[in-house]
Length: 574
Image 1 (cartoon, rainbow, N blue to C red):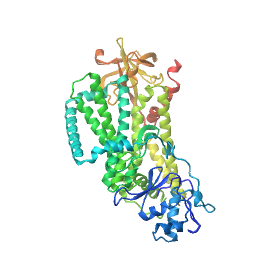
Image 2: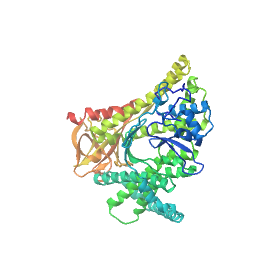
Image 3: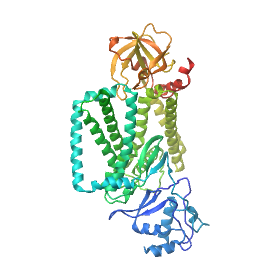
């Protein structure tokens, strides 16, 4: 069992089973299997916390604060002796599933239960806040009824296959339309419709989990919106699936959401075969791509999304990710510091440590890629978005540092030699420092404006343009929402002087287009090698300085200095 509050000390029962009257905590339930051979489940707030045997479940059901443990064993007729029964109580207490007052040395009696009927806001460690809006069970059962008939399921499977074939054909024919939509700024109105469609699809995605669970005999319990690591999202509680027998049934519930996104992507791409306006075709291309990205992201097993839940169902191993990451940290600490942070525990196979390393590194790599790729977009959208960007970067660095410090502290607590810890930690820090000194080409991600016979390199801050020297090469790019193909080459004009204030189109700073909308910026003139008339009115630009900088300095400039200048030393100083 997993403890609900690891900060509290473990409970050790010292009272006899004849005078101990344990009571299940508020919101804790003992749920029977849905199918033959499936496990009993002990849940907290509707979320399964442990799979237990039938004897364990029958005993736990009787812990109401009135019966003693001995009376519960006799009533359940399970034939357990005193040490076994006390072991059940300790396991439940240390998992946070009992009222601690009912098992402490001077406790006893019934603890008054709180009213949980209006518990719409739920916090789940470490960084998830859920707002329950409604119970989807009735709706899910209604929609699931046709899927309980084999003929309907076969018909839908054939139609889904035909839709996927149609979509593949359409992508082959309309590939140019899709690439164009991804590589040019999106009109702001169309972008709003796209965001609305993505949000609605997220809601339908969660409902598809509920409908699949209901079709297989389970009951979805709660649906609402949440903040998942500071990101808004929908959620639907389908953990009732753990009471179903058959691993593939639970996997089907997890994969229903990505399956729906795949079919919607296919429908959008298939719609490109129908003649329509340019705006509609651009919307279909962008929406189809967004759904396809959602499929890939949800199927990755290294974060707690649908792909991971499907893997947990197939392997029939709850807490797989946490166990794998713990195995990785334990292996690293043992190899580096010579200490075992979990003495007495069996060692996991090497595959678990490898999977755990992927679970640790993948989110870090994704965050780093997104922070580098999206920096110009965040900085170009104003002070508030820049502030959010900086806070996320700071939180990421702080969380990574905290994990490393905790690993070193754990090794010291479990017997690692202080000298070895200092030596190895120093070697690791030296290696990281050496990597940060690797020279990389110096580049700056800016924008350009072509107007009135002149092309200007622009930035939201004047300091970003001050290091430029006449003749330095510049790549002019299309400022697409995903792709940024090169459209021309240029160089900083020999006539360039101090940066000048300009009113730049929004599409020069962010991948959106809004007629007549401008943003205050700074610019220097460019000499363009291609025909001026072939350039769009605005776009992205990349300056390749004719020098190298250490990797650490490049990352600091990109992730900290440039956003800080955009917030505190830019347009407001004009």
